[in-house]
Image 1 (cartoon, rainbow, N blue to C red):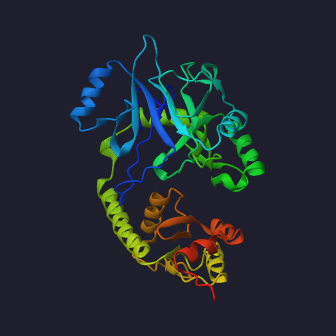
Image 2: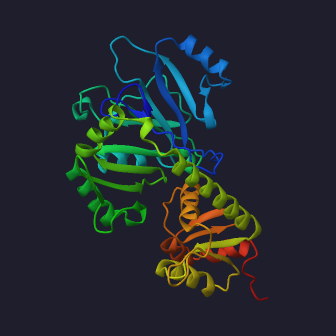
Image 3: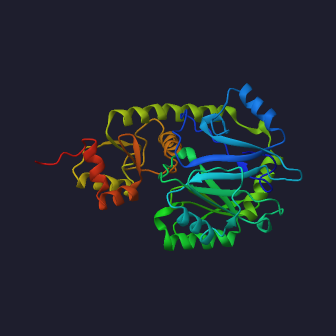
Amino acid sequence: MVGYDLEDKAYCMELTYNYGLDSYKPGTGLSEFGIFVPDVAAAKAASTALGYREDSSGCIVGPDAYRFRLLALPSGRSERFLYIMCRVANLAKSVSFYKDVLGMSDAELPAAAAPKGKAAAVSYSSKTHPHGLEPVTLVFFEDGVKPTITPWEGRHAFALSAEEVKALHARYKKEFPDKIMHDEGNGPISLQEKLGTLFIFIARDADGYELCLVSRETMLPAAVEAVTNYDPKALDWNTRDKRISAIEAAGKKVEKIIAENPVVLFSKEWCPFCRKAKDSLESIEAKFFVEELESQDRKPLVDNPKAYQEYLAAKTNLGTSVPKGFVKGECIGGGDDIVSLKKNGQLLQKCIAVGAVVLAT
């Protein structure tokens, strides 16, 4: 986590290195970050010295192709991030979602942001900030191009009250159940932390951007404590290195399997959701390769099932659960996703396209 202040005061970016993955394919949704710096010329010179270029629009293209528009820091401003700009398919629909569902308000479109096509901005107010500081603006633009959302886009994280998280989950469950990615079924995930109960769930918006909704009463104090009490000497580097090696080894096998087979399912023999996925593929008479990680009696069938699952989670951004299905290298989701694709006919279309299903003539 990096930022210009602790997470309870400032917008922060979480930088995650997923072992075994060298890069993510950039999507077309996340456009740029607008960020204040004390000296724009000095910041640009520093980026050039590090090997990063300025593109034709004036943004610095940093590591992994993320774009940063550098702005002169106004006197007295605390929050360094001004805006995050994202492409959407339907501007009115997106703005309505973030206002009606997430409780944001219309905001002034930052003059520095120069999106193509129609644009609008939303944000929370300073009144809702834990320290009353400046809000960060979310800028949406619609230019006729449907955004392609990949794990590269990351996710928006929102720290709300515990009651707001619970209410928001209930609303998602009622109105957008297919957009929920991770929860406990009847409510958000509840984690018993030293400082209290943390409520959290992961969902998507209408365009597919991922949202992390977390209770601020526990999360913010825990984040501050994690930074202030951090002790690098407490890290078990030997255990960490073994885990990294296992994930990287599993990743090589996963990529080899995906490269050699048009349709692949990573599964566990005892898993009922894996059975659903297999049944869906078998019902359309698809030819597919199954890599079973565990047997019917839950014994390992590969060197390290957990390492496979961690690699697949990093690759797909869909958690560690199985099954995970792939068609021509594209992840098509888990058990319920594959069942849904079968019902709407897309699974058959995808399998026909890669030669896994041959229709009788």
